[in-house]
Each structure stands twice: as structure tokens, then as C-alpha cells.
Image (tube, rainbow, N blue to C red; front, side, top):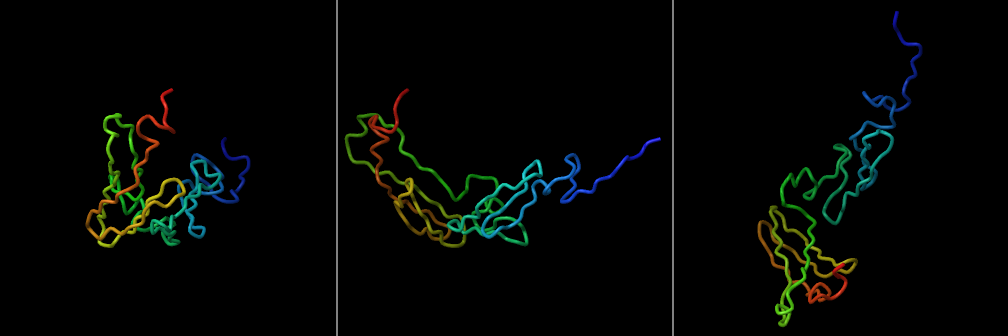
Length: 155
């Protein structure tokens, strides 16, 4: 004859395959401008910033970050909101003359995009890219990344 000897109710959540947990894995909740998502074990939350600089805010109804730079808005492609341009080590003959370092920023939306370019904590450029257009932003040349200068070195 089978059966249960005793049954202990869960205080928070009961998840198939995990048992009693603090939260349901993958579910999110807003805490101000932060999104808290229950981890895979259901025993705590991972916190993600809904970055206001990128126009993101936490939507209490969706329990997700929303805005033009949210993963749901961007989809799975190369269009994004954060990019990292870099100067690569150049041959010494190339470095004899002045050169320009620039990035081309495209705006695929129907609204103007405010662009901020930083190097570390330093603000390098601010600009606006009109809707559905491309703008070239000239940046300062980075001597440390050319002619074998520091901080790069061969090990």
C-alpha cells in the first residue's frame, strides 16, 4: 500500500523538479528602475539595470525592461545600443601621417537618437543622429594602441 507519510506545504513557491523555492525561475519583478529575475535554482534574484541612458525603464505590467534598446525591441541581429570601437595595432609606416579615427552610427528608428561616446569614465563626444540616417562621428586618435606603444604588449 502506497501513500505519503507527511506533506509539508511550501512557504513561497512550489516548482516541478525543484520543490519548494523562493521564486519561480525566469520570472521577473520591477524594483524601481531595476529588473530582478529569479535565478535557475529559484533561490534568489539576479538584478539587471534598466539603463535610463538608453531610454529603458522597468515596466511593472510586463515585469521587464522596455524601450528602444530592450532585447525585445532589438531582436536577434547586429542592431544594438552599445558598441566598442577600437584602434588596432598598425604597421609603423602607416603611422607617419595624421589619421582620423571615426565611427559610423546608424539610427534605424523613427526618432532621433542621442549618442554618447566615452573612453573609460571620460565623455569623448555627444551627438544626435536623425531618424533613419547615418552619421560619422570623428573620435580622438589613440596613440597608446599604435606603434607598439603601451598599454598593449607582446607576451
